[in-house]
Image (cartoon, rainbow, N blue to C red; front, side):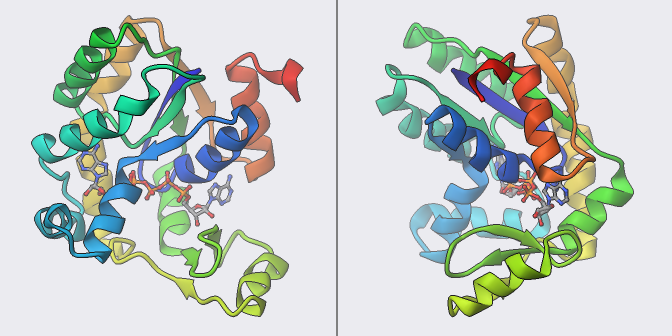
Length: 218
Ligand code: AP5
């Protein structure tokens, strides 16, 4: 199954992405994660992407579409993948369509996660990543046991640089101006399904499975 996750920063795409990847045994390709790793290793790509990411702006289409073309190559055959955070504007969606049709592939579903802005803010300001396990946690929403488990493993709870309030509000407005048009784009292709992301993680996962008609596999 080839999936795209759409939705505002902080809506829970990464969290749900890990769960559905495991459930379907498909890889997740997250442009945000690829870019953050490049920045942290200060590769050529990372140096070019860093400023835009720190401001909450989109990295240039040329850089991001080159990454995707590269990552998708080995997956033109196989059981599929999840694209998390790509495409993010109409130009990127057109590039993706061209890559897919050149490989004789198509997207099966585009999942749009929705959440009110005030909840998004709390999810983003509270987000921490466990340095040991890479698990995405939240100081407001994760259980004390889960947060403590990371510390007990010798990990620390790291806050992303772009999870500062002023950067968050720019990321949300960039999402509204650049990525919103993709909702229509995929609706017109009859690929869009909507998932309300407000419930706890396990319930959102169940709703996601239903929206993909996958309940019978659980
Ligand atoms: P990216 O990494 O894609 O960030 P994003 O889209 O802003 O999304 P986030 O990772 O912030 O949120 P998420 O929806 O994954 O939420 P999460 O699961 O972590 O992109 C970062 C940057 O890279 C961009 O700003 C841009 O500069 C660049 N970039 C990336 N792709 C690009 C592209 N295609 N083109 C150009 N530039 C690109 O959850 C958030 C928090 O909520 C966590 O703490 C989690 O524990 C908690 N949580 C999740 N679900 C629940 C729940 N149900 N209940 C309670 N808490 C929950």
